[in-house]
Image 1 (cartoon, helix red, strand yellow):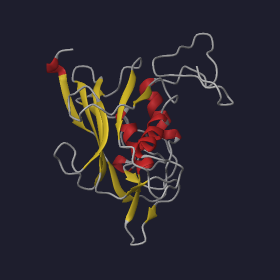
Image 2 (cartoon, helix red, strand yellow):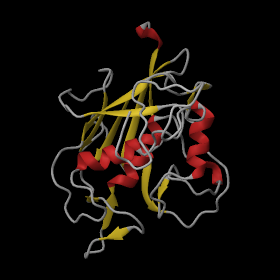
Image 3 (cartoon, one colour):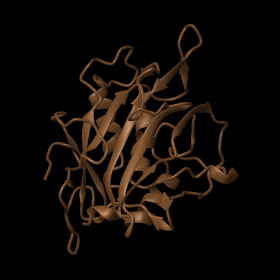
Image 4 (tube, one colour):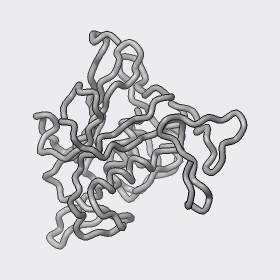
Length: 247
């Protein structure tokens, strides 16, 4: 692929404001640039270099043990929802940087020298400007925030400061990596993890799935068996219904 076709884009970000309750309508949005819809090749496993660290999560609320495990759970929650999959690299040895052909996921005080402002996480894309095919996507989380990992209602510390849920924010940002935008932009009201404002929604919703399948098509592998006419690609797997076996 010619380097001249490569372009960059800063994704819309997850913000820190608390949103009011939403009404479940269908309003998903996809990320576009120059009239092109950004997406990964369907046949490609998206390898994430998870560099969030192995430090224990303090004040554990949801059973997560490390920031790495929080990020991994957030990413793999998108798997098997459509014909695209994340796989996790555990080496963490690649240097972070734009254009290094590595999908880096990490904490930092800036995103490549730029301030976060009100954002708690930033997703960046490099893509083919002729086709919209994503070549690389990095996620950077603001390490100045007070991060925890929990489910349910938003929490605050004893001093009233916000406790940011990394699992919730990461799930949102990985949706951006896949090419999903904010469904609530433009005044729409919908229940979705991809809404621009952090709220009580902490898992992937039907509107998010609808957006994902609109881009990539439905998942072609059933949860526990490979049926006639279906396929498995790199990064996909089958798990038995009792959870004991994996193909």
